[in-house]
Image (cartoon, rainbow, N blue to C red; front, side):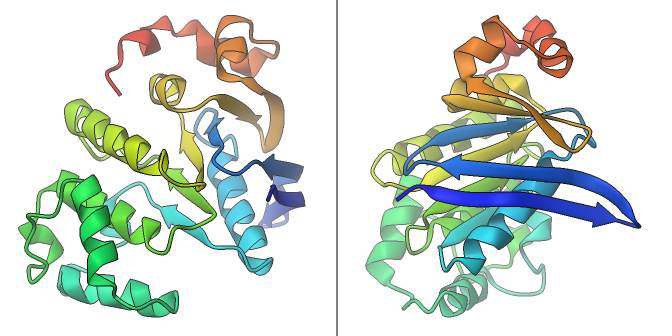
Amino acid sequence: MTLSAIGLSAMRSGRIILHPTSVEIEPGARIGLVGASGSGKSTLGHALIDALKAQGLQVAHVPQSPDEALDPLRSLAFHWHEAAQARGLADGAAHQRAIFSALKIDGGDLRKRPWGWSRGMQQRFVIAMALMGTPDLIVLDEPTSALDPVIAAATMNLLDRHLERTNTAMVLITHDLGLAARRVSHLMVMAAGRLVEEAETGKILNNPQTSEAKRLAAHRNWMEVPC
């Protein structure tokens, strides 16, 4: 089923920060939402999440840093249990083992608090919670910016392999064109709260039409980023 949200918009302090925007996402799609800081990409991502959840769809969100998702005073087992309850799911030991194994955190001790795990493992745990129950869409908002490039690339590789076995669609929000170029088949370019260009990834990278897309594609060093 195509995921569809029409006329998404947002205001802050009486100012429009997201002009009316419509989004359609096919099952299993890999979409990159790119643009400079302040372009409105995260605002669109949050509006999309809210709209699809209002339709009764299962949408998961992975924030920029595990610090935004994990309470340092609570064990990782507590976080997993709370996430399962919030979605009306049983803890499902077998399902948990499958996701943890896919993301290579199955050796982690859930009795520990987040700071007892490495940053890379913490972020993989947050992704694992997002994948609980096989959501219709997972939205990743700068998911690797808090990680070093090698760990970031490994984390995204593991996520890619897991998603290949599902119909979960993915929206990757990033200002890192190198990350998007290697992970998505379709790009949506934001500027000043508007969706200014949308096309296959290769088309935008090699033949951008708008000034914003041209600025992003002009930084050719994205080709050398390992992510």
